[in-house]
Length: 320
Image (cartoon, rainbow, N blue to C red; front, side):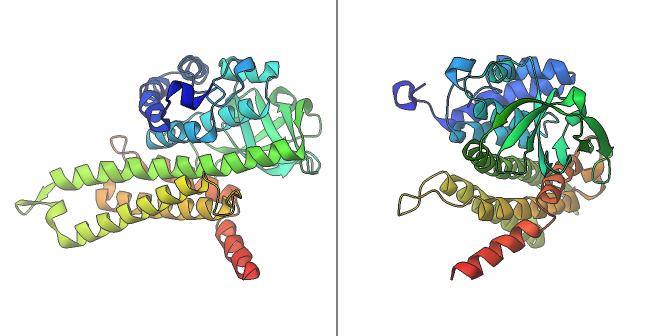
């Protein structure tokens, strides 16, 4: 599909996705797949030959950001990435059509015999795992031993996978997997930024309506300073994400790692301060901001719990 022919705008995809994501939130895991697929979200980047829209990462980004904003507990990010990477394979068509659900193990490899940090693995059909040689393999989760790790999130735990008897359904070569990883880092940055954006909007609204001593809390200078800093970090993250989509001044692709590290750190700060400003309400069913913070912390843990930022810094020093 040609963006010039159809005059498509990425931001409109986020607006259209909101209703489908909200609907999916009210349904079971499998029914959610049908809702999201019917709205075209699972196959937005998948090949047109596989029933997708064949659009670029910039069109997936606002969709994923909306999923983060609404705290969607479903592997939309992973499913649309893998559907794109599989090209015109029938497996891609199954993902785009909502017949199958896939996740991505961000740690481990097939060569090591184990993998981890796979979101929602218990409910998925397939998992993508690095093969240890630069490429990746799509595995049938029915042939994988799954052990849940509830350390960071007892309600939606991460999963560790034992791969000794895993059945391989498809493989990605090094180039295809590198492209998926790059897209993945951009979309993860978009997801956590969306989660923080949702929290900031909720917090600003609460501060403007919560009255103490005859004035809304937002009238207090200390609250305004904190909200302004949160907004500044949000804008910095968003600018970085949009910038990494474009080539640099030499026509080369930009590194995604600094953008991802910055987005994770900024989102964690914004979410923690949002919970702080809400007081105890940040941990209630009415204002469940802690769910978004858990997801951000899970992504941080998948990249080494701060190791990503340290590596970015080391790479920068080495390049000078």
